[in-house]
Length: 229
Image (cartoon, rainbow, N blue to C red; front, top):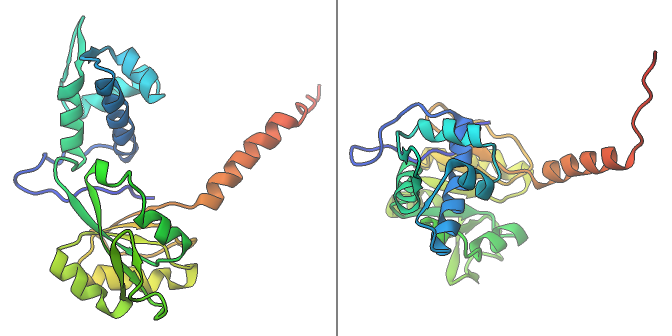
């Protein structure tokens, strides 16, 4: 699995070769820092931040070391400054327009999700292959036809696409997005999609996550297995 990365440019952060696992945790740290800032906390220790983020303190310090030296010994981290640096690193100091392809129950719910806008993400377009959905409006956005997807991506300069289609349509939609110039894809379809080098894909499979939880629940309710001596 690869993680979504923001495109780099001359005005953005340098490519530091940050591990994918660290990249995946940076939004968690950002959310924790935002919560601390909202509570009026000006500075925090690595332990306090790790508790707020729900991670191991040593792992947090190692992750932040990839960004630079932002902590002060005996004082900790300046919450606002560190929040800005992480937001800058993951591309949240600018707005990103995305297109959602597939406006069924999931796609419609995503289009109405208010959490995107607070994180610099704006749903700019909705696309669907079903002619009955084309022209309908969700969250103030009219659904466009799949044939219009390349023009939408070009006109809006969209680099991030969200796939919320059935599994059988995922690869075709991926190919259209990539051909149109989209370089980062969030895939909610229950299918693995193939992309060329230079395109990042992040897959979200809710059924797998629930199966993992079911596994842990089963282990909680099952007696320990006997040890053979």
